[in-house]
Amino acid sequence: MDKPRVAFFDFASCEGDQLQIVNLEEDLLKVVGAVDVVSFREAMKGHSDNYDIAFVEGSITRRSDEPRLLEIRKNAKILVAIGACATIGGVNLLKNFQDLESVRKFVYGDKFFQYETYPARPIKAVVPVDLEIHQCPINRDEFVMAFKALLMGKKPEFPNYPVCEDCKKAENICVFEMGMTCMGPVTRAGCGACCVVEGSVCWGCRGFIDHPNADSEREVLAKYGLSVGDILKKFRLYTGFSEVSK
Image (cartoon, rainbow, N blue to C red):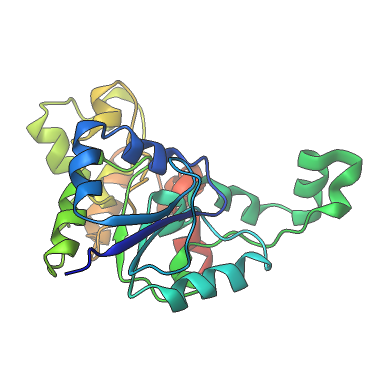
């Protein structure tokens, strides 16, 4: 029986999610042993358009990206978006709230006219996606879990409760109590509240839970003198597409 053929692709991103996969080291050998990796620019020179599963990192930021993504979708039986840029748009969304020509001039200077751009969007805004693996960068263990499930023909199960639960398990002091703001009450858990554990806040890189308790969130914000508008603007870093796509 032939092994499933797997390919990795990237669009606008830092490619940190693919590096997480490469950094699996010994576990990567086990993963690779179960499949035939036919394209993975971060780890090999070869490339083939004959694959069963496509893992795609990065957001779509140019109209010229679309034909390539459509071709990947056509070739793949299963398309998996990996990382915040691919699943929710990521940091590239910041330009969506600015004048795009000004952004091009700021980045490329007097050669800006040579580079095209349009509002950044996640993969699912252009083609159907079969599975999303969230976080920035992705969690290696979660990737392995999802990968194994796909190979067994199963749908991986991801947490669908707020990061606040991970925070409580980690015995963190709520950052709201320390005068900071946090996306934890509405963000999908599964990261172990790693940012809060390290002394920061949750930035929402795993995206919103499916059915966030909006009333509870408003109560929390009101308690600390904040509005929904305040927190959405502050955390456009990752969740801006949810705001502009409504």
